[in-house]
Image 1 (cartoon, rainbow, N blue to C red):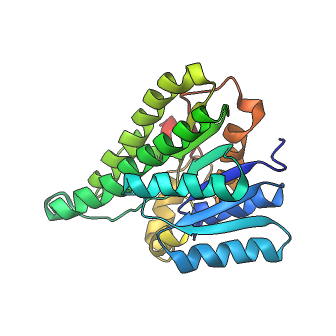
Image 2: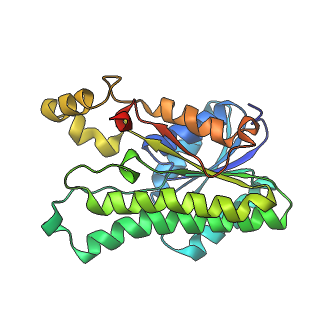
Length: 250
């Protein structure tokens, strides 16, 4: 899909979906900025990419701070000489019952998932525009942007915000030739969800509620992100691509 030599930022790339996205783009020739609040984790992933012959650098960033997002993009331009794609994978998830949710829990989710996605996208778009780059921004939403399950209200609210801000940013950036889309994964086997997969009852519930009868692997979410970041998706913007095994069919 033509990623050789392209410059790509992946946030939340020290583990889970983000790590798979960073490794995946590096394998097809992209230069990847592996960014995460976990500096050691980001360095580990960048080092692994280099050991496999790929091109990568790492950066420690707190996506909840707009100034940090701007710094990340500036450093990427300085190191790679440009920015073609931003993939916003950074996010958090805590399960709590309605009356257990605190103000800190609410801010934790909204800051990392919604605020971080917006300001990283804003910084990337500004630099793309100023340098005449018709780039791609791909956000990671969730099926819980659209449906609800118990004990997930702050996460659901923050991911609902990601879906809507994707549309708003797509509308404003369309005239610049910058596309903004999102992937909404269903159940994915990552370290963030490991506790659920270790519980046979929880795993059975997930499989029974997913028409395809299984959970996704991170590689399958990367495939969806890869498409939206590619030139093949040049006429697609403001879209939310469901990669949910059919979860939202019913």
